Length: 513
Image (cartoon, rainbow, N blue to C red; front, side, top):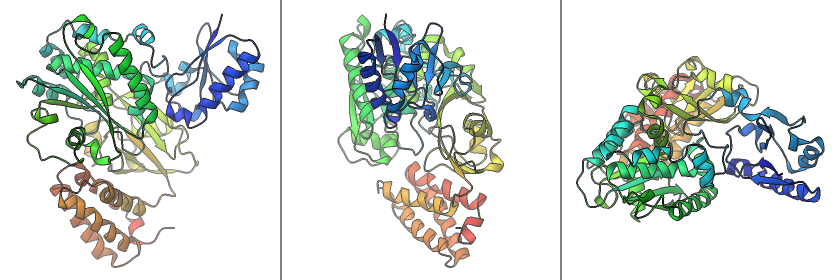
């Protein structure tokens, strides 16, 4: 009888040598006449242990990591096919505190299943939400999503149910469901992990969305920098078409839903919903003036749902287990769970899915284990390159939309980037302005020109030239960008700049080495 061995096909694990490990396991098993079945699963999100090899034993899956190809012979010699002890053995993976203390809802199956096996997906509760949705009226599906408290996980945190109801209420011959998978924020990888590790969850969420609002066509807009996710999504869509989950009659219901994959060319601005729609239409990715909202006139002028990967992937569990089940997680107006991506100068970086309400302190030290360098953590940036810098004095703030807004920060897509006390916050503030200058679509003057002039002003500050006068000018410029920009790119660029000025003024008043 063969032993099942899980070796991640996740691109994070592949970048650390997972492919060579899988090949070496197959090679040595053949040489030793040992029957093994290798499953290329998604990553569990414990990236400091990648490549994490798991062996299915009678009672649990025993993990070994981080495994290099050179370690494989020693693992065989030690008897790892029986879950035997070895210096790389981390024990039952689901008992590792970092993993066990999480509340995995959206990522429940990631790492556990073969990402492209529909049988595996169904065996672990897949399509239960779709089955229930097919027995409901569209308005009832929308109400369930509304009652769950789900808010957009892409950054804006807009209530998903309200967006869906707006599309439902429109009268149109054609409606669309679009998924924005252009994950461009620094330190974020949840969308990629889910698309590579459990693509059917995203597809199921999009089908449910289509049935709910009467949309018959869906598009996933994925960044071209995600070749592994693209490959998995294409195979997953083909499998769903072959088994009747996509096409003219979803599961024999008579309701149509088609799904296509579209690739973005690498523009950060296309993470903004109207720029993405322009790109989907084959145009240059530029922000649209609103109103009209995409829910009323979106793709090709038709009512369109625009949601992020995690938002759509959260829908199946809401339909399967009910709005009340999902609502039980979280605090205040932030309901459910958030996949937090911990990156930067941190000892144990990875994906941590938790109910809203965990403090930054617990995340950094309870999960992350402190900085990778061993030095004090000076700041974190939450919400991507346009998120505010949060100082250590505010690490008791909990992760929810309102709590972070209360200190002038934002949660965004849940990316947390860690910096130790060697960071120069003046240079980080300059980077935000330079980033905006490079990524601006150019449609509005405050963003296009403001970010360029801001970078020049910051250069003068860091060079010690008329510091006070230039800081005053910089503050005026930030206010103009904040209130005059057409979209969040220019409107949020002041967040990291102003937060750095507020919390780390010493880095602007003398040259810090």
